[in-house]
Image (cartoon, one colour):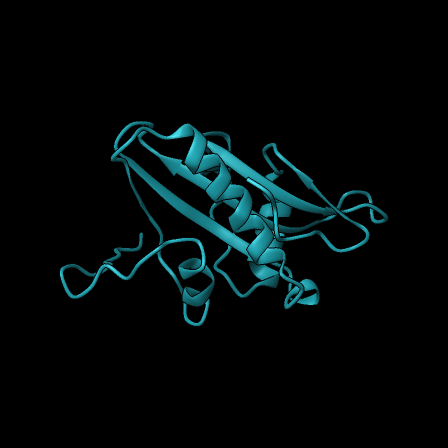
Length: 145
């Protein structure tokens, strides 16, 4: 699959677990809730796939990421799609989703169910990669602890 999305100068992609502090720093910068440190450590470690975007000239500072989690068979979730506000509107979110879609296309079993919770207006990004709205047959629900 050819990539129609390119990284901007000074940014590289990295396929490994990011550190808890940089994960929560990116979430905070993106106005996403900061997660419990121990829960974050477990969640990051147990990801099936993670793509991180880092700066070359600032000691690999994390500026974007996305993860795939799930049960390894029937169900998968795309989570933590985030790009630091200073680097948004440069198609980096599209690059992250392209990497995730490439992973899903090759690595998950046929007939698996992949979902995500989309904040508006990011739903437009996910539609470009084949995700569809689940309503009116179903809706997303959440309980927070």
